Length: 253
Image (cartoon, rainbow, N blue to C red; front, side):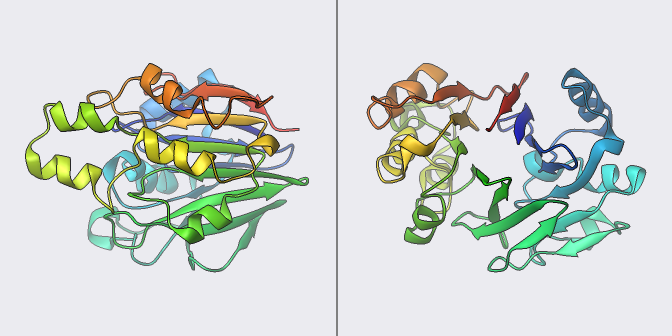
């Protein structure tokens, strides 16, 4: 298995997961033109995409989904609550996701995981294949016991470190937005992400990728410092996904 990112942050998100036969996108928050440009950087083209998995309806995750699906006839998987016909229009191949039922795309098993976030029916995804498991976990306000259980044993984990608590409190956002971001249905802080890492099988992880880092309420160095303790004696690789560059292909053996 291989994973890469077109970009991660409040201005657009998209993650590629593939094996020798199947390439899927998790979210697509960029325009078609920008998506093609970023995919080309990773050696991929729109026709390579077997499906798009949508986590929730916020623009930084769904902006390009419907247009891409119509232009390239790409299947889209999303929960009934996530789909908004008025905003997204008709899509040629739309598959409804049951948050509590796994499904298959090519050789991959895809497990949706419901998460606490301020969207209509949000879920994140764990993608398994070839005896390996890749977890995508962003856009949630706290770690529920179910989330902790589902993500306990991954070989690669894309984990949200959205904000530093002090930076958010003292930052430029209006009070209401600060409450939303830092609330139980907002986004994970660096400390919350570190808390999850202290409870899961970190020793199994080959790659830990810090994702969805706020450009106004966080800094990569703060996120990395926060997660150092739970991965102190870990032999894997630690990465930070960038808003502009995402991250290049990583092999999951």
